[in-house]
Image 1 (cartoon, rainbow, N blue to C red):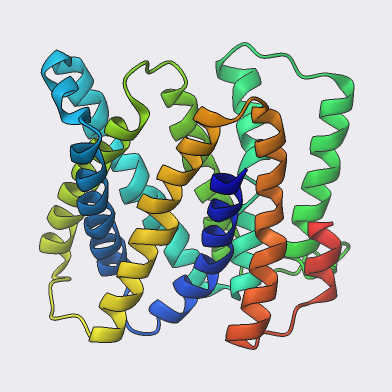
Image 2 (image 1 turned 180 degrees about the vertical axis):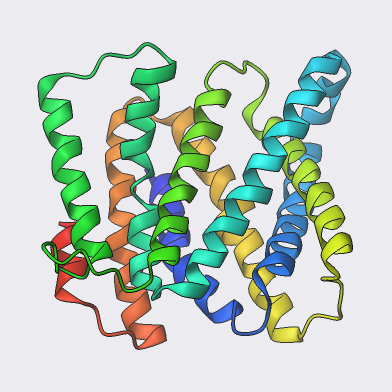
Length: 271
């Protein structure tokens, strides 16, 4: 429970951190530096817990899978997500991105053979109505989006995230070690992309501090705490429900730090 609450606290602050840091860094270098911080922190955790010894037991296919997964997350996922944050108010991007459990449920039906009950289908329908309310700021009939590209990117990020976790469902390797290698891969992919796009430049100090915060509290330490919560808890479903406290907590931080007026449509849609 303590690990889960700590994770929720971390994730409640990162939407604000995204928005603040994007004032100093473009989304591409932000993904690179945050992923680099996360990779280094996870390397320390894996070293202290003796996980690196398992790498010798992995096969070539295991490394190739991590190379591919690193392209999905962190590279592609955070590029799409941070670009959405550049285009949308933090409250809209955060809540739209947090519809990934809906997509994950649908992907479970499509790719993992899971069944969707009538009640589950009704719940997903209600959830999608909430998404439309947030995306249109309550103007359902006109379907006028505050920024269509930003909305589509925020929703696309949920497809990437859900796809990433579906692929991970059948991977029996140590979760934290897999995550570290994904970040190694992601940093490599981002370094290549930065080279080809001319994105290398000396980042401002505020940008580096923000990227460090995101690497710690959105990625590495938050993931570690969440994995620990899942490992220790006798009731995983309770933890999965608790995680929905995150967008509510995030709205409070957004209003307090960013001084964004919280739209009634955001609260209604989130509800």
